[in-house]
Length: 261
Image 1 (cartoon, helix red, strand yellow):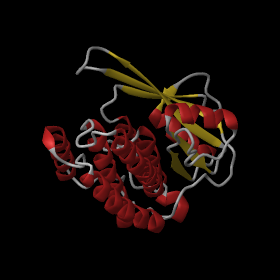
Image 2 (cartoon, rainbow, N blue to C red):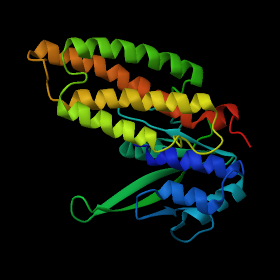
Image 3 (tube, rainbow, N blue to C red):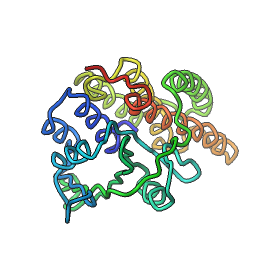
Image 4 (cartoon, rainbow, N blue to C red):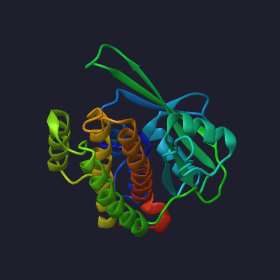
């Protein structure tokens, strides 16, 4: 959860493009990030895959007025609204983008090639029909912020008691990486998002870091089966809250029309 999901980047920068805050080329460059190339397949009127710049322009021309994010996992169809085929593909990818104004969604298919440390990553976004209906379980920014504060407090208490919350070289390295990322700039979201959305996303990433450290630190002090189970029980709802908050932050534009020109 430290790294923005590709669906978050596409939705956020796509919204900035629709708001007139960035150019198509700027949006495409930000969405691709460190990947080698992104293509979009299945656009109406196109016989095959096309580049992001053309695809974003085509979606805007078709009537897209915004993009929102879905981050589903088994048992939690967060941000999905159907139909079943789109939901199944989004669940397999654990992320998707849904357009407002046109009945289409995009699901990323990621291909990696090359040796460890020098991977060549290509992404194809599959365009599929979606149902125009309210997304599942997406909170408001205010709800997400309150949930995050409570989840962080409760999880920290439980994980500290189990001695897995933040000690050792793995935890220290993760914290250093987080601080370095935060210091590189405040571009947590694309231009135009309100400060509250940025704050919620930053807090969600911090909670995600806590969860990652807890998992990656092995069993820590949780030497009994009951203690390991207690840690799992503490982490599952925290992960859920953090994902809900991520979606709320990315969707601030389409849910509240808050991207500022």
